[in-house]
Amino acid sequence: MAEHRIYSASFASVYVHYVAKAERKGHTRGEVDQVISWLTGYDADDLERIVADETDFRTFFAEAPRMNPNASLITGLICGIRVEEIEDPLMQQIRYMDKLVDEVARGKKMTSILRGTPA
Image 1 (tube, helix red, strand yellow):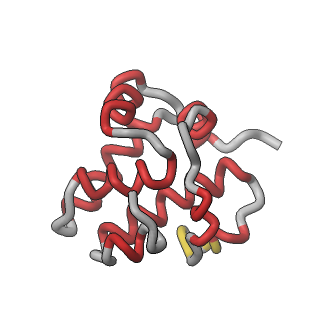
Image 2: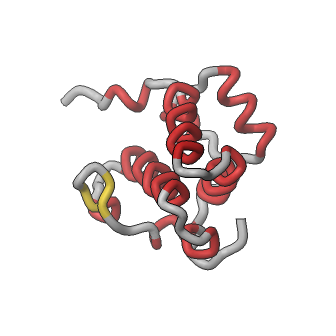
Image 3: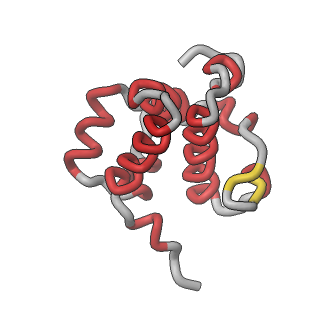
């Protein structure tokens, strides 16, 4: 079976859409960065470098400093699929990030988005 094309897509190509979605709903790039940092352990400088280098999603997650152990608390539907039921670990990590950005855009409280833990 062929690998999903999102794995080789650059993080930067999707990140701009994450930020645009949040900003359209009255939220900020900083909030998007905060939830991505919470999930992956990347800091602001890391994210800037990853965007500039056009790092692909496979590498983005493979080199993440620290995947948050509470990521498994992220549940619900994204693109009609329950994130907690996704079997492919990389696709699940991507969908976790999608879900967090959706929650920012919807205006959910940051403490709730971060599953009650600090960023």
